[in-house]
Length: 404
Ligand code: ADP
Ligand code: MG
Image 1 (tube, rainbow, N blue to C red):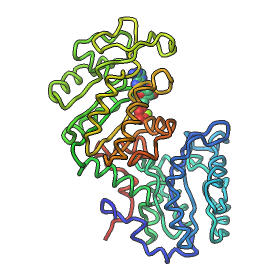
Image 2 (image 1 turned 45 degrees about the vertical axis):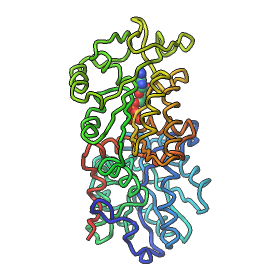
Image 3 (image 1 turned 90 degrees about the vertical axis):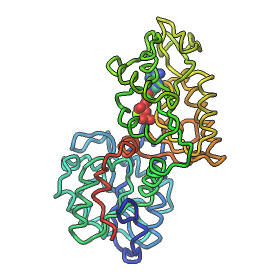
């Protein structure tokens, strides 16, 4: 049980023996030249699939992939993902090149023990994003239960997330949280509601405006809030410092001013920054104190003194929640701040600090650095993790069967 909802572990799995079970996964992974380049989200679903197969059930996987416009588009086919999945698991993976309909039902009926099916991109159907109840019903018809293991999609009221769960329940079938979804909700929920203290949050990324609800949600709960990334520039402006040509959200300066006043020492900003005339001028990079950002330069990363301070504050924490890169990580010249903090947090996690990381770009940066496994938990959901922290109801969780 998780948050009043049934979980896979609540079911008598023996009842699913020999029967197809629908599993919503989030296989919206980066693919380049037809190859999956980061499979964190795929590997994260394997425990649920293993559990179902061990019980003799036949998983039928549903996932979206990219943003096709409600119709088939070969550029967004899940076929490369199916091929990658085959290399990860000992089971036969049957890719079904359709989303729904008689040929899908026929193939599902033919599944044998030890096989799984992956249906084509749910967003090839116009009913997916419309949360079409008829589409949900057709999917629910295929299986004896619905398992949602797609944390990255639970903030979306789409048919493969909500309508299918509603339809399964209407058919007297359980709609439950998979092992990954349970783990995500447990880590993010505990981090927010019952953190081991001191509780330190680190926020980076491009904009305050995109994170204001997260800041408001974390503020009453955290002991310290460390801010990096371009977001820090708006605070610098509010402090009266010169920000040169850095990205600043002018309309959020009053908000930054208010947060500075109200939060005092709770809020920790970078002391030094890495500047350059522009993001492409990797040969003219300089570290300067925050008081000395040149008029013709942009702050594109936090400096080494800041990394050391953030590392020291998080080293003494009980729990750390991190969202958002501390610099423009896409460019190697501005990756050191994010990499430095990531290494410090990996060490902290190994000493027992609970380190939870959420956010798409943050998770990608950790994957690139090879540090995912060393954190306590790296969320597979970007938007979903933030909406959860903001305290918003997640429609995909709300739609699951209530625990008795
Ligand atoms: P997440 O996806 O982890 O929630 P965000 O989407 O909020 O993270 O932020 C990631 C983006 O922030 C990256 O594209 C990165 O380049 C950008 N960014 C971080 N620091 C800066 C900076 N100082 N100047 C410009 N862009 C920045
Ligand atoms: Mg992002």
